[in-house]
Length: 332
Length: 301
Image (cartoon, each protein chain N blue to C red):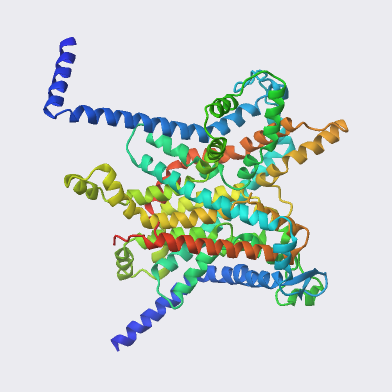
């Protein structure tokens, strides 16, 4: 055994000599390089994960643990009381159900319309095509704030050419229902709608034309080709667009506060959590105010509870998130 | 005859094409073009809400809203300049960091899948409300100082800072260093998608190019500048634009916040004026950046 190792070394030294010291230098640089790389990657990974872990450990602490400087990560008084309180405050199960249903509906609508439109842009030639595609880019570029006031007022006093007012004497307030937002998503004007069109178009541009031509020759119509051939082919990009749409919808509070009235969604409850906590404490104890640290702890707990479903989805479908997007060949 | 038939076919394809993008056209006209024009009109007028005819009336007041935004409002100018100067630092930082990360993640090493999974986690963590909650941590800082006052624990960061400031370097330089270090987290957190886009660009470079270069005696450094960079330059353009948009559209941006609070106060004319200024600034910045970048974009095909 020992002899074999010695032989190996001898061989290595011999080979090194033959190469004029090149081999040794190369091994050392590559070792140093991979060590540095590992250190850098570990550092960045730690940077990303640490706040998350911090929140997890904080969410299991009692308030007095926060003030104890000897406690950093592991809580001394382990408790699940925070979770119970937060889940009461934000009405967790109901908000979760609402968020889930709502995000799924919206993202399905968004992705469906983006797929159809993206396919149209990738495969057909029609007059004004450049103009309409410029409009897609415009949709990506316009900050939602710019059009928000107008949209808001239009939905608040909704009317179609004054017909409704003529019959009922009143305009309809659409802000309380999720319908306008659903319609917006269906026409790919929802949250980041233009981006999905862009991504799916890029993907379809990379699919060989022969695939479709073969289908046409075999007597498949336009729409049948789309549904039978092109849709299954684009499965990876559609999944990743769906996942993105889902995640962004889940955490969005901007569109949902504007258009969704009183539906309780996790993202909206989360922003209101310190206020809810104050109300709750007022309700039970009269005049007791939550300390800053305690409020912060509640927010951390709420955040953990809100992103747990997302993390689960991410862990399951991590591959779809990453790999499929890199297949699209996003280029200008 | 045959020509006519072909023309017919082309016409038919055009109609079908329009059918496909019809949802977009409907949506664009009703939820983008019309509101955009209307908000443009609003920015030049005083919006009076009344339950009577159509809900609101526009009263033309010329450029007064814009003048108010630039000269009377105490915050708007400051916020805009701050936002733009932050962008000028943040966007290049995000691009460089994400490019380096993509280069590293494109190499083969043990545990690459895991590292990749962690690196794309920010796509979730930096979206929507989560960012706002994350960076709204002045409360946490208050708590930290409270703890420090009431105990004798030494903070590692603070003591490191003390050591460095005693080491004779100029305090101005150190301050910049701290600022950079503090924003590292923000930069890493907002570069998830950019890394994916860069990776897709890197993966589309054929391996044979590197092999040929190596045989010709090209070092890794040279082949980075001569092969990798030109081949991903078109992806860099996409990333530049995406990063700028992403930066300006994030929900915790101060200007956005101000526009929204004014809207809630029913000051629609003023908030539309500010939104238009913001939008035009974004357009100009994107145009400038993409003009600069597209000059040296190289197309392989």
